[in-house]
Length: 224
Image 1 (tube, rainbow, N blue to C red):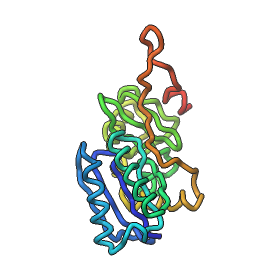
Image 2: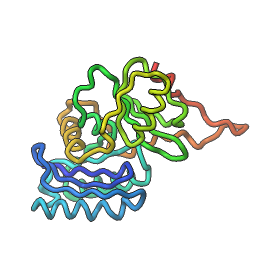
Image 3: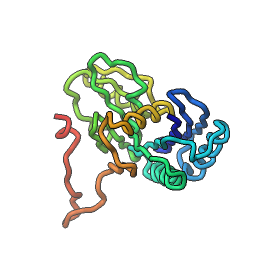
Image 4: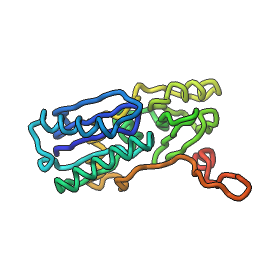
């Protein structure tokens, strides 16, 4: 399958053409903002380098979060626009899914994918669950864990200080090849479906009378 993989969820921007598991063309740039203006150029350059038109693609894979909501919206909008114009399916992939795909067997450890958010907060992806929490409010894992993602070093350090059996992996950012591989499995129905729309997991801004934030389940509650 020929897949265009787009990522603008974290502090970088990338576009990659993957065909049958091999990278044909790819571009990546570190940046904190401005993904929406950079990503379309990268996608166009990838298609040019691979000698393809958008209509030649079989799938478009795009990271939907967790991460920068502005960046995610830009990536999803671009993917949907290309998909509609070229009549190509758009498949969503989470940051944690792509990171997990890049890692070898973890020896029975639970994988935590930690993505930097804002104001000393992180997004924590554990299996199919995603939480937004302050980095000093990390839950206690129920057994050995492996940590991936941009916020992994700090999370691993904090857990180790508590005496947790923790392994810091070297997986920091999703790569185009692994985004494409997850998307291909999702397209084939091998993993759970996921809507190709931004995954927004920040705490709700709405407040109840008296100024108290609306309540939802905490990471500690959901990880029990």
